[in-house]
Length: 269
Ligand code: C2E
Ligand code: CA
Ligand code: CA
Image 1 (tube, rainbow, N blue to C red):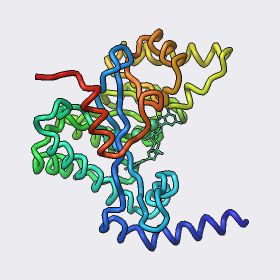
Image 2 (image 1 turned 180 degrees about the horizontal axis):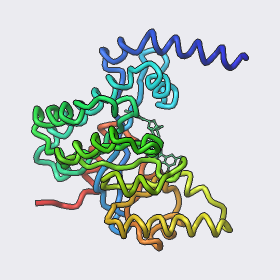
Image 3 (image 1 turned 135 degrees about the horizontal axis):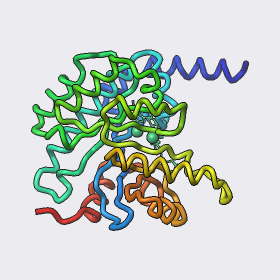
Image 4 (image 1 turned 135 degrees about the vertical axis):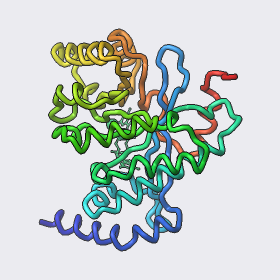
């Protein structure tokens, strides 16, 4: 009961403050590098929101994203993040990491907006960013009912040149039909998959065969939540080289990210 009351109070605080916070630039974009485990080179990054509140300090996404998903404000935030990412990318012209792929999360609420893919493309054009350098992450649970609406949304994104990934794969009730019907490029395997005990033989086999299946389907696979050497060796052994996890870097602010990207980019001509 007590908890419910606190939650409702928190929701009220968030709702009262969110518009102002967006205008005041309190939402910042942190980047978490995606790394090739064989070469340790960065090949991409995920954009993740942080609310740096003038009074309360850093508020993590799990304290505001679910509330924004309920009240619809997530649409505004996701657009803001997308545009800010394009602006950063435009600023990176001439740097050795200018072309790395940045992925942006889109919440379920956005998928209903048919015109959204074209609007996103318009933002890319405004900043001179090729759509192929942006990947859209859509979480697995959105795909469960593989509606024709969702399929055409993803198809339009792909026609425009965006990459599309299924996020949190394996976290919910994954339907294999989803891999048949929805034309994505990347599967991100959920970090909970790595939280296995040493003798979870079945869990390891499932992971191995998911990676193998994705490769057969010509889908890129990224494993999220890599924290240890042991996990790196296991995942490399299963044939996946791409990782995102605290072992390489936590989500970091723009200054730290630019340093990281500069240091770990392949030199490109
Ligand atoms: P996500 O999209 O699955 O993002 C990955 C989350 O996993 C991030 O949490 C990241 O910090 C965490 N993570 C990555 N590697 C590791 C690891 O090795 N160990 C552990 N323990 N965690 C790791 P974060 O930044 O707290 O974000 C939480 C969720 O909030 C995201 O999960 C995403 O669903 C949502 N989110 C964040 N920013 C946005 C946004 O701008 N728009 C939307 N729609 N959702 C967002
Ligand atoms: Ca994500
Ligand atoms: Ca994820």
